[in-house]
Image (cartoon, rainbow, N blue to C red; front, side, top):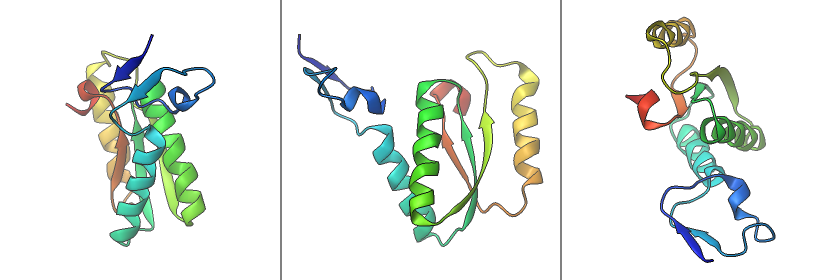
Amino acid sequence: IPQISYASTAPELSDPGRYEFFSRVVPPDSYQAQAMVAVVRALGWSYVSTLASEGNYGESGVEAFVQSSREAGGCWLILGALGARGPKPGEFAKVIGRLMETSTARGVVIFANEDDIR
């Protein structure tokens, strides 16, 4: 059955051997990560923090970003995951505190779902 997705970005869905009839209208996470590396380089930043939602999108996105950045010769700090859906109220305050402690980072690259961003 042919399937067209408007939101699925997981890179494994690009495997035609497993998903012969799957197509998407958004780029996979790996393309988004390459674009983010290009933006960071264009801004002249050599050190940024990364932040991700727990799960396939966030973790795979940051992994792709780190891989692309290594190929480009960048330096990145990985802060880890934000937590599962419905995080505890104090969790975001901890993340913000950790970001504030990283004074050498010029920006934050985020792969997160809408709920975590909000």
